[in-house]
Amino acid sequence: MQKLFILLSLCFVFSCQNEASNALIVKGNIKGLKKGTVYLKKANDTALITVDSMVINGNSNFKLQSEIVSPEVFYLHLDKNDSQENRIRFFGNKGVTEINTSLKNFNYDAKIIGSEQQEILEEYLNTASKFNNRNLELIKESFDAFKENDTALINETEKTYKKLEKRKYLYTVNFAINNRDSEVAPYLALTELYNANIKFLEMVNDTLTSNVKTSVYGKELQRFVEKIKKEE
Image (tube, rainbow, N blue to C red):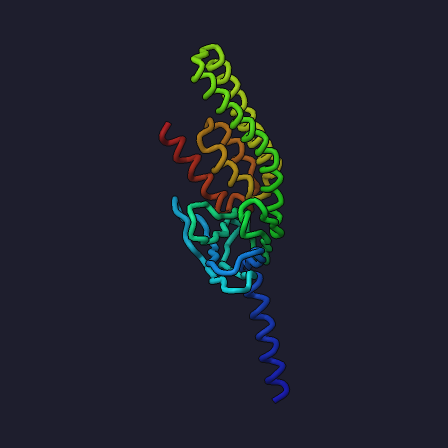
């Protein structure tokens, strides 16, 4: 009887270990949330599909999970019955990702502790935000120039925008190549360089390590490059 108990206990332990090692577990807290529904979503072609959800009623802690083959981008979505986009993007991997945020500033207060890929993505986004901020400034300058019918300023703004766009492309390519051993590299190529010159996509694709090439985004980037080359 004692041997049977030990055997069952071991089976339970190994079962739990196997579940944890083959799943993405997302847990955390949404400060100030009393009632609502949180969803774990991921992209499927051009749509986001729900892979898990949890109803919050009083306790603002949550725990969601999904099967995962290779590191992939997921979204934590909060249904607050409003018109705002309450969605947090993160790079998930097998194991635990912890996300703590607030009801008031769901998107901006998010603190994410999890995968190595998430850390690399955040490093990229910190610098990319500077390009995006400058881009917003140029949009305003262009709008003001059109209002004043200032042709010279319109042309100058357009030139500055094109230079900024090229700088961002080059930064993204360089960052992806420097992180060729991470699934973040093909993801950035697909999301940030999709409308760039094919040579940029090929530069990233050709430098990926063998492991990354067989990942979800590695395979997708290969298909995307081949599709563009066929259409040329």
